Picture (cartoon, rainbow, N blue to C red):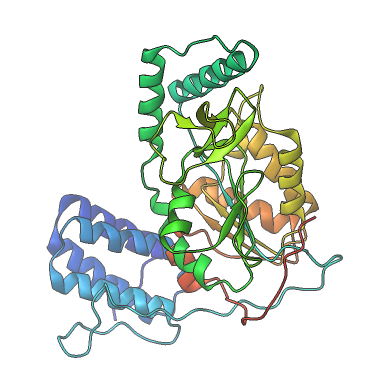
Length: 381
């Protein structure tokens, strides 16, 4: 058997081969990876292997190497098995792989039992130009609430429309979230700092019952609770009567009709991650308490803690006081994801902190242990 190189070298060789579309080099890299697995080397960079598979599909790699790569990944996820050469009768295609879920050991005893079973913290980003539009929108709406004769210029509405359309893009890190929300038997809380309505689309599409704090009531007791810290493009605020209306089908609309007084209503967006944050103080504190009192954390696209901005500080303060049993991180920025993993392990020594994953699907298939179904009420403090 050839000398087994490091996992990082095997990953690097395959990435280079894909970039060059050098399929001979790619085949050689796969054979060396099989040597690596046969040597008993502990594989830790699971999400990197998934990225290679995704990139291979995107680059239209030949079918046989794709099957071999799928077999390699399956063997990584099934300890004790070895990758096999692809064949028409026995090898599963990369689209039909069944993954074996590793067990997570039970956490050590903790001081206080958490009240909330599961919290998902979905962080969002906007650029400098988008920040200016949100800031101006809030200023105009507050001005209209005091001076009803105030008009919004057509060019500003055009810029706002562009912003809403830009926010409506898909987030690959959320792939697989619908399955988690459907299968988890104890609905928890979703905290979002983004301005888009992607989470609402997922909930609606999969007929998952939900509420939005201060805006929408659920249709039954068993539901996921959504806390939109920065507002949301599907929530509209009326300057005339200071009420909020929810239109889940209007994610790209910039003017709606207030359900209370029929006056014009505008997207309820406000700055959150700046020194002059406009977030509701009560909602902010409720979010802190939710994080502190949740058994399981899932951080999606966590912020760069070095920026010292409000969202980062909120998570850091909650880390220090939390009673987490299990923590999960999804991030396509490996350095940021790894930083939060280390921080959670440091501040919550009793918690099981899973490896950082590229999307929710990878995380769900490999690290999240679904509890047995039972009737349970969520206690929100």
